[in-house]
Length: 134
Image (cartoon, rainbow, N blue to C red; front, side):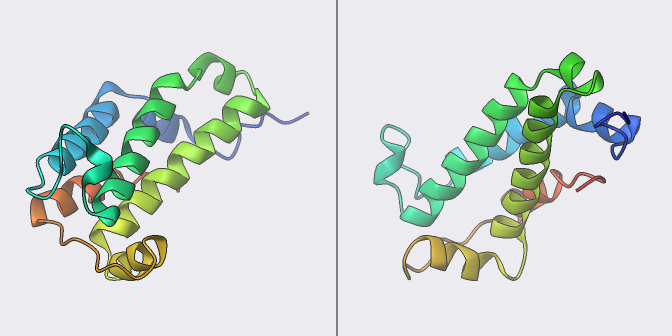
């Protein structure tokens, strides 16, 4: 039976599980929390689009921390699904924040509310989540 990780290169695995990658997600969370419209004491009171993006990225960060690398490398299907979720969420985070389509995605998620504008710094940090295997 082929390994479930056969479609992932060692470089991809090493990239997404590295401390540097964790630091890139943490930097994005910090940049989102520094947004002038973010209510730091009660994030749910922030504009919907900002809260949803912050919540999504923060959960992605948690999922990365919970990833069992040894199980993934040994071919565990649950670990593979979690790995794929993290990669997909990183790509979605980049799309919501840094792409031209991001405003439309956020507007749909927030039921028509005008999405917040992200600074170029936040957009750069979102682009840094790009994973070669995505």
